[in-house]
Amino acid sequence: MAEAHVALAAEKLFSIGPFPVTNSVLTTWIVTIILIAFAFLATKNAALAPKGLQNIAEIAFEALEGLVSSIAGDKTKVFLPIIVAFFFFILFGNYFGLLPGVGSIGFYEKSKLSAEVESKVSNGPNESKAESPDERSTINEIRTFVPYLRSMNSDLNTTMALAIVSTVATHFLAIRYLGLFGYIGKFISLNPIFLFVGLLELVGEVTKIFSLSFRLFGNIFAGEVLLTTAITKVFAVLAPVPFYFLEILVGFVQALIFSMLTLVFMVILTQKSEHGAH
Image 1 (cartoon, rainbow, N blue to C red):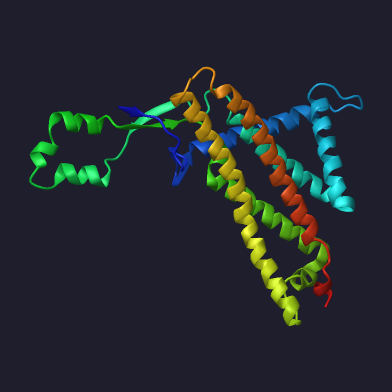
Image 2 (spheres, rainbow, N blue to C red; image 1 turned 45 degrees about the vertical axis):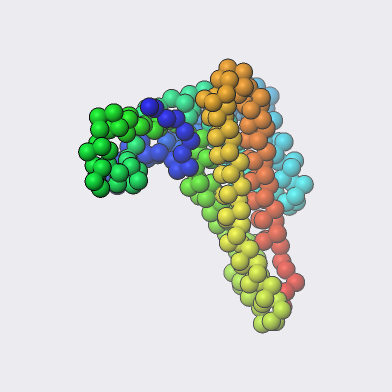
């Protein structure tokens, strides 16, 4: 009996030395290569009258530039490259996961016996009965499906890494704009009230990592499960179509939300606070 399902953890495909390579990591590499190739081709023969890939890149860049400038103001030139990188990396990763074959082309591997079944087979007076040929055959035929490629943002490790990079970049820019002592002053003060508020803000900076990562992971993983269920359990031809359109919208919205939240966090943390001055 072959069983296809969406596992919570990404599945290992192979190892490079001591480092395991999962299907979500492989997808991340492919998306990164695609983005680098697109950026190279779009800027290779840049002209004053853009055409082709350059035109597409400039339209997308200018749209994001207008959005970022409305929030960041005079810091747009510094924040814009970071926000653009986050947005397109997450967007391409989300849309790549919707391509035919991603999550559906792979191989089957035998599952390990569960502790309950293994105990039933190996222990007790009914051992001979539990090891009957029919039952042993059924147990050995249980298999799980391992796709070669999987949506990278359906892996919590990927979204957690993105959230950590976002937070580290935000605090680096805060030190750049406020100076080291100004940055420390946002969280530590001689005034007990401001000190308490600063400590709450420090805790909030840690929780931002979890909120950013779990929001993106939860939406993309839920969409992956929804599409898998619609394709394998319902009507495999027509039922998934509306869900695909829904996931296209969700993929765009989640990329935009992650990028805009990162931008807002950057703007807030790089502003001088009144209690920081004290």
